[in-house]
Length: 219
Image (cartoon, rainbow, N blue to C red):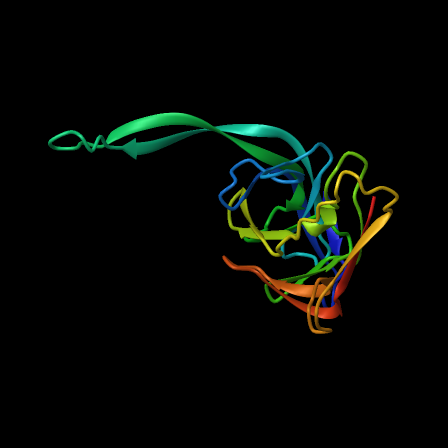
């Protein structure tokens, strides 16, 4: 499809979009994310990531689909041998994948989870929002909006990096009638949520432009 870039200065600029499939991994947890089952995480159907192709400030939605199985070859040695020799070992790796469309001429992709239609990309930084009011679904243990992570790539493989740390709150079994729990920073400068710009790198950083130092969880 031919798309007009509304952000192009001067005359209108058009570009073609193509359907692609991107694989997504999270740091050392190959093939994992989004529902917490301590200590593991797993992507779920209909999960979406926002992908920026550099042709428009608005993100492209990509939706989780069936995992991609890739063959991988590694070299291993037996340390008990007098003269260890490397042996090629083949294995299959299952990688979660997402489908969507990007500009055909895209050279570098930036991505953020969870998907936010209002997220933007500028100067290598993704601006998005971590809500200060979060809802834990029935049977769940976290609001997905708190699982903020980012990635960039020049290929079809995204390696997401966590942006935030998490706080685990346990409610005693005998305590009933609780409808919400609030967590507040010790100082006004403590950033627990809000809107901010994320520098996408091996160690992402979040600089708040509208900081919140209190988060309320409802169930």
